[in-house]
Length: 434
Ligand code: ATP
Image 1 (tube, protein in one colour):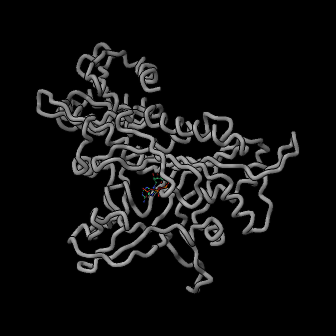
Image 2 (tube, protein in one colour; image 1 turned 135 degrees about the vertical axis):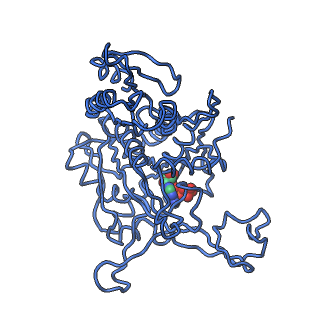
Image 3 (cartoon, helix red, strand yellow; image 1 turned 180 degrees about the horizontal axis):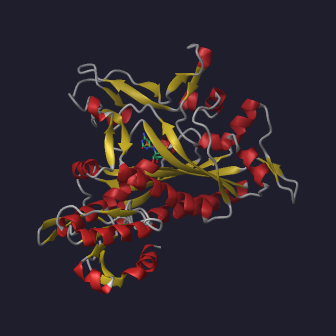
């Protein structure tokens, strides 16, 4: 298996080219949060759009939802998060560093100084804050640590308002917050991140088949967007790893430079959440089959993906370096649907006549594709800049364009160049990009 590019190289490219910056950098940086720059925000939107398209818009059994981040605290008591959403926390008795229980040396000592560690205690990962002007226990609320609960508490609202029969999937993309003990590995573990979650409600007898379909469907989403199969695996969780709500869970893992890490969890949650909320709020949350009259709590298959971890995996999978005549060419071989810029228009020289033509051409392309225009530096340097940010096509306007009204289209991956009449360009690029 190819070793993924070193983390430092990717972090440096992300900063240099405006994908990702450290939060609050001018104040020395704030480790557990990240800001997405002009290219990063485009990439992130494209990741979310690809997920939404495949999960909601291309299916007739899943609908979307967008729920609030702050919810009634009762939700988190009923879901079990107040009591059980914890990680074991230990402190080194020598250097006083705080660790997650699974971060010690194999001998159970401090992985920084080798010192003895104190007893482990459970640390709740939910962020707490207060609503309203009075800061007392009655005003405590939580920032959601997952988007899923917003879906469960709206199950009947969605089912009744859409008048749907099972199976029904409800999908949501949004921010989640976890007060992680040890954030790190760039975007992989932060305290503020985004999730793409779908709760798929089925008849209990259909749950096992649905669980296995979802594992494959979600694995194929990543491979379809260019993650090589040798960097992707499905790993079934042992019973000791299962979250409090889960009957079975399979993690979709990516081979990051630091080893295998979870991208997404596909979990069979049974009817745990609807049951808990039904008991806690005193309402019957069952589904009634209008054909048979059968009344039951649906079972749920959850797919819970991280926007940031997926984005990071797409970047690692895309990063490539190859020798060329000027040294090393760095290319982000991003899937075309994910690339932040689809087409770059480049006049061969800074001659005003060429620049005017090229600017006009870029303006014609912009309504169709994310288009960049660049007239600075040599053409070779500009190609490299576009390669480095993953732009699939560069369109060059040269002196021949003035007489033949044709332009050169260069392919990022093969570097092959082809001459296209400028009047046919939109049509030609639509064919390549869709
Ligand atoms: P891990 O074991 O790595 O902490 P988890 O099993 O707690 O992850 P889930 O609760 O299943 O994660 O959350 C679903 C997805 O949300 C994860 O697969 C991941 O992509 C994303 N995610 C969870 N925690 C974080 C985090 N702290 N930073 C970034 N993404 C996260």
